[in-house]
Image (cartoon, rainbow, N blue to C red):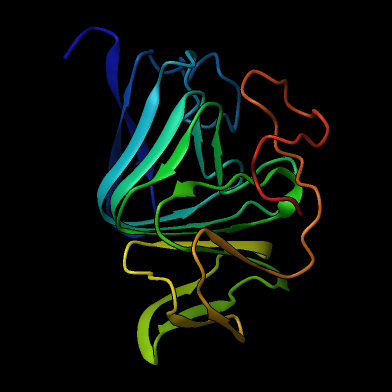
Length: 212
């Protein structure tokens, strides 16, 4: 490991922690980053966050997972809930966001939604839901997962490497027959997602991400 490689330590719910590996920049000094600063926020756009395994549950007041470079999900089961303000979202990356395997569910408010590219079908649902909403997923009549959201939310993203085109999926009282790519349910309009390098607070951009 080089001097520029480091581990980011993320507190999660329960009696354990998750360690995610990031490459390319040292983490911000917690003494100088300010109260509430996301510990995943890296100084360099060359950094990478990779989730490759584990059972990970994240309750976020700011961005749930934040990379100034790329974000890759390649394994494990990860639930991200929050925040409840539209200036942050459950995930945030500046360059590339890719889903390669495992299960990834993220819910939050829609002001800064970003999604992950995926070769398997994925789901985005626009639906106003309260705190402690039970999110259950059935795939072809079989229960797949259950998760209680710790925050109110209006947008839900679901990725699972077991999704296949033609599967019937039930979630949040919606029944979806999956097609390839992203399956979107609800009133989808322009999202305030910024392009790589665009400052926070930039207006809606046509960057290839879905519109809400």
